[in-house]
Length: 434
Image (cartoon, rainbow, N blue to C red; front, side):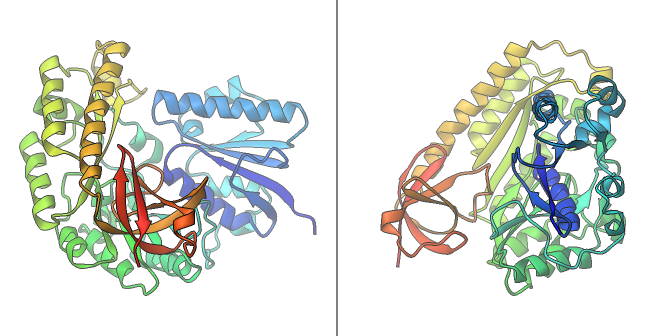
């Protein structure tokens, strides 16, 4: 039987990516599924992001591109799902009637119905999940939703309350992927620290990490999006002692000034943040820390911003991202705080933080010259194999470049020891080590 071609376009975060992969896994027996911009597709699904203004605009622009293709007769149907359509479904139906149907974030059953795959909506997937990443690496979503109502964030209103996946379900998924050749597993959630609290009455991230590390074919486990409050400290002992657990932690802190943190409703103070960072580095001395900061939040005075600048200089995060604040509909800050800081000033503050971080990154990378690291090879680009160390997450962090001519035995997905020979702000250069 001839299969229709179906293309899934994913925008936004890695959690969206997992949602797209889950749909693909359930429908691939009936559709020829691609995770790319395939204009020859009969049906296109666009998985949207509705988190911040720029992401929303990218989602709208992408939808309009495919409407043009539909109008030209190049695709038959266009479905839109994800965070944007969860937030603005009524408006989208009114403004973009050319889309065949809009679905929210919890509409798997409805999407499968629309694709004539309704018999798959209640089935338990017992095959390896289709992944859109290179075969050797995958994202594992351990929960849905969030119970942290930070003043600036719309995610709890979009995704709902925190719901942990049962541990045995996550272990089974990782086992199937590992048997299929995946070696690196990046754990994701809106709040990884909270994992298990709703399901087991206690924070169970350490137990989950131990269970996954016990799987024979797992090589690396990496932790993303941990929240500072109630961080399960035993996780650090496991990270220090178990070579399968990458010495890497993604912990969005947002700010360091107490007044700003309080207005953000973050639930942690400057002193508590500094103490937590101290414990991270004492327990795991070579840990790589990644954080995200938000500048220009209502009430961020020049003095508060300078406090943040000094914090970045002193802490020397290995990886750092920064976003200018934008008021998001229905959030506490949008409804209760006046947004008086100009867009220009917000961007200047963000640029200043990133300029400081570039210098820190170069300094930290230069210190790696002459050292030997194990890398995983992600791809070939030009004359180089491009890989990463355990201290670097896919797509967002530093990459290691090795000349293909120097490494005839390297293969994509392979793990190899290399010596760092040169460094830039966000790239390392290396040669193979026997």
